[in-house]
Image 1: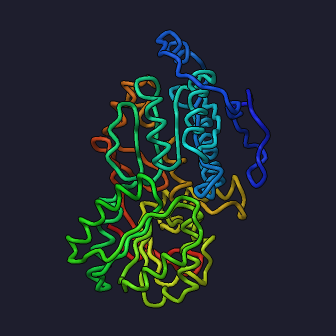
Image 2 (image 1 turned 135 degrees about the horizontal axis):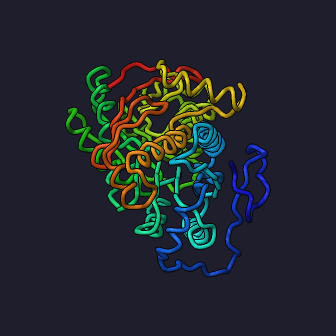
Image 3 (image 1 turned 180 degrees about the vertical axis):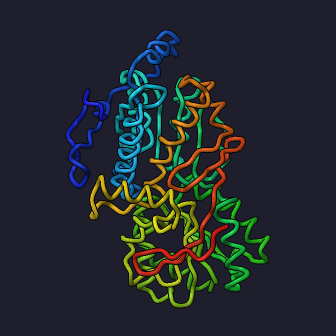
Length: 393
């Protein structure tokens, strides 16, 4: 069920049942209350499990908000029908994780200090994760669901998304072996996921016998790509690796296709899913590849069941669900599995159980080993407004 305390009305374009926690007053100075073990014990005694879900509804990554919301609501419905998590019915509150990181952190402080949540869950950019983990550390479990740069080791933070070693490395080797890709141009949004991912990507390109002919980072929200395309055209890469986020990726890929570069230059993207592909448009997807642990065209029993439930609950015209949105469904499935293995929702036993566990979701079976998620990884080619899987690693 949805929390109904201290909320504002649903925002245009989102499900009418979606309720948001009110942001802190402008000018207010939020504070971090000291950890209260008695309060934690009281939370554990409640019949309901209060989960604060930090999803992005504004800014460049806001395009994923509707599908992420639907995926979370589907998981809550499914889990609550089966008795909840350790007998506790899930109560879900949504918080916008878009905008300035300091504003998101202020909402998180309020959620921890005043909303009495039991678990933080999030599908947002890594810059937000770095801020939230400082607040949650030692206080409350935090499940982070989308693709990210890897290396998360903060106590109590459980990351279940794809990382460059499993996602990007096999795709680079496949393009080198099958498309003769040697010259690479890297372009990403100017924040931690592209920074760290590109460092690893350069190693994988070298392993495959290639080299980087150019690299740049673009401010989040920037949508004029003429200068970027001119530099790409001048360096004549075989492949442009794209680590742009949300609508920034949409505007870049549209401009790339309209410039004529798509006919001669391959593109490999790490965060282009079905939601972003729809925004790019069928005319601009020539020679566009994406690597991910999830596409909604995967032919598997687990995904067939997920897609059937998603369509039944939200209709055939619901926002297309891709990797980022679907990760919110997986996050709740993971939480349930880890809690049942630990026999507890308390921070330390839950985090310990979540570091080494196998759970199942729409991606099929996912094995978490030493805090790193392992799963089947797919390389897909854009085919109009759909993806066609060409290799599974």
